[in-house]
Image (cartoon, rainbow, N blue to C red; front, side, top):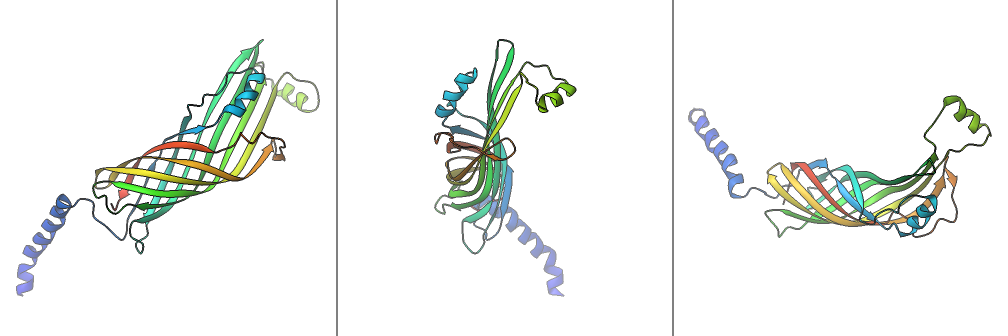
Length: 244
């Protein structure tokens, strides 16, 4: 009976303790949690080798100042290993150069994409925000698309051209698929308990490259300097339960 009479008081004390605790130590260690969000980035591949080719095609060179990518990522904490989280991510982006030469439209499009498993360790000696080092292991792709045409297309002419007659239009798609290993460092800055802003960087290493053209046919003699290796900067907004 005494317990029942005092239950409202006990409940209020417990509730007050739960509410007031985050004010004293807002980002506490936890054996569980996770989050996910949107991760825009900026990749800086080396364009020197591809630029030697696009000049002969009649379009301007690609900039070495990089281009925008977008994607998403998510993770969960491994409760039995403090401060370690695993998850997955994916990204993609492209840049292009085009021009008109003697009435002919010309364009070269350069695209990067990929995704994989993420592993991160959050430094335990930083309490008010997160500093995480880790890596991404997965698959990636580089695609180069070439287009040349006069801007006029007809359904019947497309099929007649495909059957063997000459055409002023030209297109080709070159693909490079590979494995990626990407060391990363990220800073997670919390807005409040369940929302954090991320800024980080990394370098994408590639191996096991395979080049193909058009309908997955082998492509030979590609310059080694044209590849998916790239330094990048990444940002993000994550929603979840975070342990710093």
